[in-house]
Image (tube, rainbow, N blue to C red):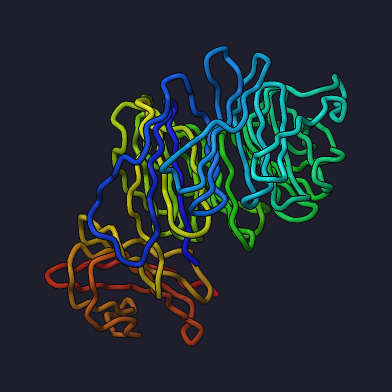
Length: 428
């Protein structure tokens, strides 16, 4: 299935990158200019045509805008009356969505034609009643959702917002003093991240257990199907899980620069993902978060939000309030065709160690005859995985080592004049 990615910046520019089977070049096209009266903080697309942007306008008062043609035209859909703004918008489909921000939570069931404010009286916490500054709203479907905010506020609903389980994160086995984001993993399970780690609840948010304990600012968590998820820290550390957050693999920091902060993360499948920063830099991965490559989208202009949706789009907003569209890559038949890599590259396999299947990825900046083979430490050929002509792009191949014994193996690629060798460990 094709997917889309939408990126927005602090000052209002949206860039759109489309996942298609064949793309030419690495160009961004301006498709819209937002009014300078707006500050856009959040973006959500339900499909390649229907999207919503939220933030504030002069006042400040909260503002929601919508598009029905993939970002070519936008109209004001809702304007608040009180001192407020919207930090997050989340749509489950073209009709059902939520908007959250400073002391406010709204919902719609008709694509935003009408927005209904959720009463403060539904939220009863141990120390107070009502909402704080909501940082994140996320719904798995029209029934199960979670909001998190300042004061470590967490509220989970299983009936579309009619009732809420309200709590603060006070895990028995760890400490999280601020909560930045949350997501629903299944009918009863949820994940939140914040200062101090990542926590999981298995009872609709009533109790929480820390599954990664480290005093970093974990600002975003993002999950796709089958329990695959990633957590991003402000200093660009990546955590990855394949079991709904019960255990985490530490992939290290994407970059180490005190002047740059990571802002948001999004994945379109188990391999392709993006991280955006406050310096206008986008980092891109095609191996599930192990290796990353950077590109500058908006020099010295902070990017602030990503929305990954099915079909074919990526949008970015910058401080000039311009909306840009660009073509990106998508996974097809074991490879990535589209935006060409700049260099030949053989990536580290993952997982590693593995049992019995691992994935090997490589990048081709131009067409080449590719040979990818497995060898033992004595230099003897174990198995030939690829021996054929390939077009430019990113590719992946799996090695199933069921027939082989535990040990250290080498995988070697030859593509034109390029050759590289890396080590992998089979552990049964």
